[in-house]
Image 1: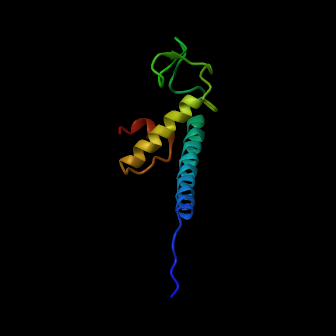
Image 2: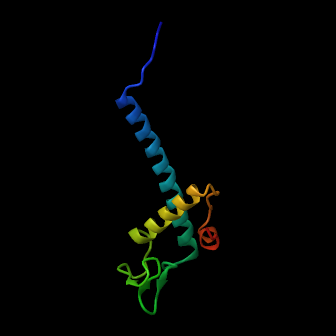
Image 3: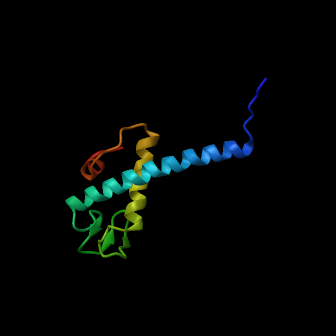
Length: 104
């Protein structure tokens, strides 16, 4: 009789691989939406030019002067949106315009 037992280490390793795969999917989606946002906007869509404030952080001054290519606030906002879509089991938008129009 050949019995196979899964050790705690094997189980933890398998769970880590699954978690890494989920992160990869999230990063792919975030990068796709960032590229899409660049097509529509030259400056961050959540940046107020007049007051130089960021609408995502609700009233704090934007440190990047509206440049959102590598903005950690904008990227965190998109990651949060991804988590919201996944938690509500809704299909992920393929375009930045769909993200802004959809109400979750």
